[in-house]
Image 1 (tube, rainbow, N blue to C red):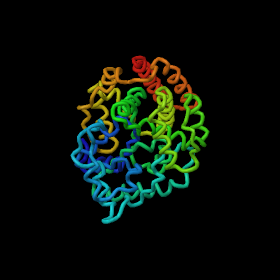
Image 2 (tube, rainbow, N blue to C red):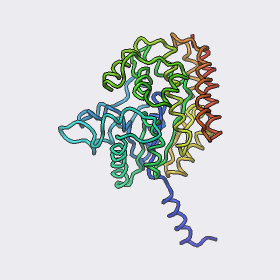
Image 3 (cartoon, rainbow, N blue to C red):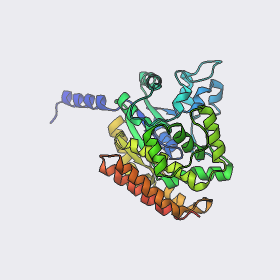
Image 4 (cartoon, one colour):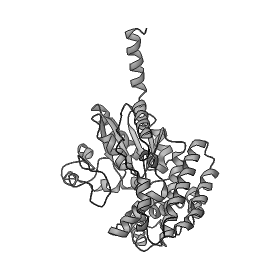
Length: 360
């Protein structure tokens, strides 16, 4: 029988070992917002939404209340506005979250941190420390961090780094339908913007070539804002197969960075199909950070993609098999040591083959 003091010591040691925060590394239309919302709903958590979004550069206190899901966002209902947790970091009569810089909004894929990274690290550190001082666990939902995941893992070893992975066909389809139905080209333009502004990096150039992506005919080094606008215009009339190729190239680059950098991988496709997996995932969060989110209401997004296949127009889905195969070979060629992760990505590509076969 254990002595009470021994039990207290074991509990204390376990508490000290718990991760001091969560970084959710997600992609656009990956259902990452839903995962974040389940963590944010916990009393012990403070959830920061998109801490690298360029929206934060111009955000004011007066804007916060209006930052809520729209009818076309596909996001879950939220009890509080998206950016509610940033209020302490905003000033009366001013715009911009303290410490945020607009250049944080473009992901990077180089092996070595860039000149902006110390400022980015300081910004995130401030958000973390202020939250921990109030006895809360900071939970960050990123859409622009996967390329920099190795940098963030090294800079924030005390944080639980979680990768959110959804098969590329479902993820792309979610954004493509928004463009077709509501003329919202943001999610179609995003991969072109990120790839184009990183094409000086050899790894990114290789991914672009492997997937056969044609980028907008604009010089990306002239002005980042101008290039972003050019990508938005390009996306409004882009050939569908090229849009999907760009998406897969970015998807695989992000997956590559997740391979050796996450403490936990959330498989969105499996989450919606297995209650057992949902329970095990909750237990994994509990073990690593002390938070136990309820994932029991996860939807089967794979089935939803199958049922909405007729809404995906302008893409020869069967031709995408070659893109999936090329992207997987690219990943394997990078020397990823985690065989289980490679198998998980292979399963995603097999599923993507099945789903894109339904597109016409």
